[in-house]
Image (cartoon, rainbow, N blue to C red; front, side, top):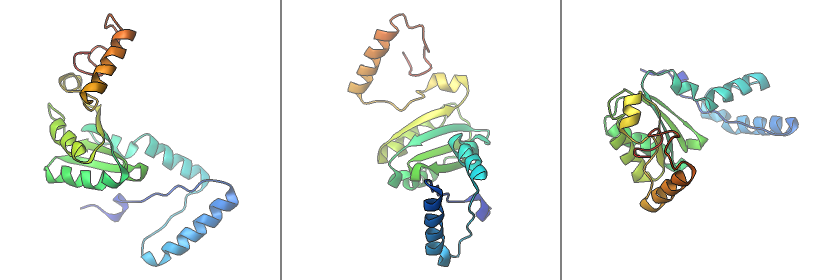
Length: 177
């Protein structure tokens, strides 16, 4: 069972000090009757906290394969619910960018659960990128979300123009490239 400490909402308020203090005071006053616990972070602690979020540390601690999903913020929660409905062995996940960026840690498999993850993303729009998996998995599936045919053809022409001998990143970005 997860404790309430496993689930947090973090808001970043930036700007001139007097403005930050005033907006923080107003926000805490507004939320005072919610019954939730609040903590404000001093400048050094805040910088450290946001660096951990930027570096995806809450998800990096898991041993599984890591996916980065970029979606409309309003679709983030729904996509995670779809994935849970697919009975995927999620180790953990967290949202950033107001729900528009989802980091997933998932039990490793030979296909990194690609079809179900991309099916959920395709239903709501966005793309899924496999960030961490073994070499054999990364060579078996596309790391990046498949592109529509016209965009894929353009990408291939650009790759051909810059790397006609296919010596750079062979097979690491897209199968067959």
